[in-house]
Image 1: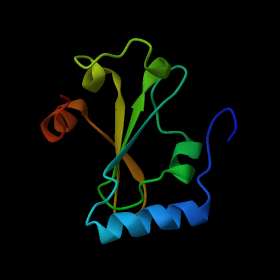
Image 2: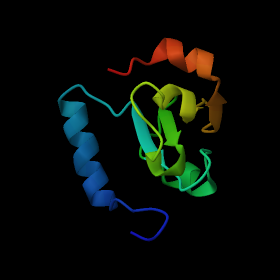
Image 3: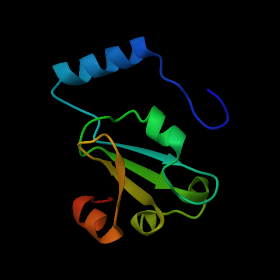
Image 4: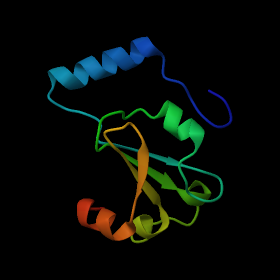
Length: 102
C-alpha cells in the first residue's frame, strides 16, 4: 500500500476470483474515495479490482466527508467499463435508474 492505492497480490486475487466463480458470484462494483473532487484517475484505471464489461467504479469526493445515504448518488462520479476496457462516465440520471441505495 501507499498513500494513493493498495495492491492486492495476484495469488490473493486468484483465490478470491476462484471462490466467486465456485459460488456463482462476481464483483459488480468498486467504491473508493478521493481527497477532493471525484474522478477516475490513471491509478483507478490501472488498479481497478473489477475488470469485466459493465463493471462499475464509484468515486466519492472529499473522502466521503459530506456524503450520506440521501446524497450518495448526487455527489459521486460513476464509471462503467466498456467492451474496449475503457472506463466511461455514467450520467447521474442513468445511474439513479440502475442502483438502489438502501
